[in-house]
Image (cartoon, rainbow, N blue to C red; front, side, top):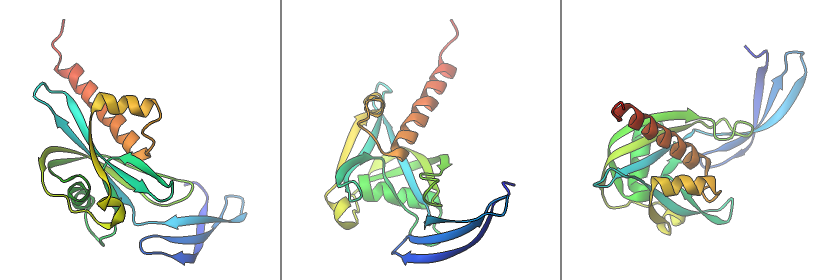
Length: 193
């Protein structure tokens, strides 16, 4: 469709889950060029949504150390698709237990998106997790072992996105999609004047 052709990949680094390839392509006018690409099995994320007795929505986050930024990052539970052939909903359910100690009664697909289209072929499958039940966390690795579970009202989280305090892409996308869904549902449920 685009007129571009992928010619081949040369793996230059093989990691535990990802590998880096130098890929050759041909443009519509026959120019051959190379790009470095991180090849990935993809990832999943789940936005855990709770409601209090008055119906006010809140979200459960994990605050964990992220080595690429050498900083704590506030984000929704997520993980790599590092179990071969595991359905994305199963991975999302597992990550909820591992990172925030919640089991979802319902996982609703929100969107599949490209987290960094210029660098990787990774696709992230994002879910909305509801009907949540607290369970024991099952952390893996030093980052999760030293992470903190953070519970915030949805309105507060949206304000943190707008103020630049939440910077993680999957978290921003999830929060804004869920806020929009809830606003749309509220308009539908509201009686006519």
